[in-house]
Length: 132
Image (cartoon, rainbow, N blue to C red; front, side, top):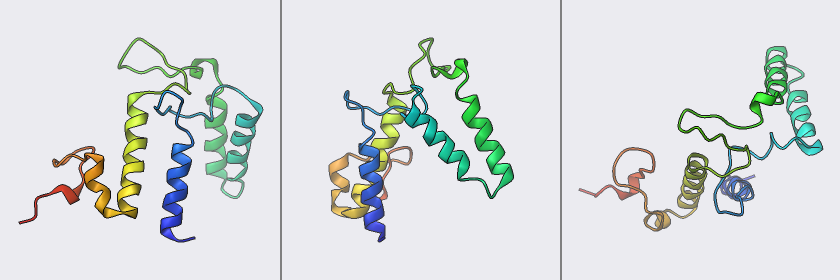
């Protein structure tokens, strides 16, 4: 598979996880508990069968995420605890930034359409630097 095809596949996968409100969530693959999410976790653990330390870590992580204390995401930013599938600014920003970077990689002229900032930091794009 060519790099451009991989980038398109990645962008399509990211956009496929967009919520109806236009945002993105932490993940749709942990909660709610479902057979599909259970099998996804089992396959993830099963994929590490040849590497015992990785197998133990993935199994520990998969089991820990099913504990009741992880039914919602708690942060220090607010007293509100959100659902795993609830859109939030942090996850939305980085997924949109990934989509933008993929779009610009596939067509460099599109950099001006995304509104990247011309200052180092999150959202900076070198194509916006003034040429000497």
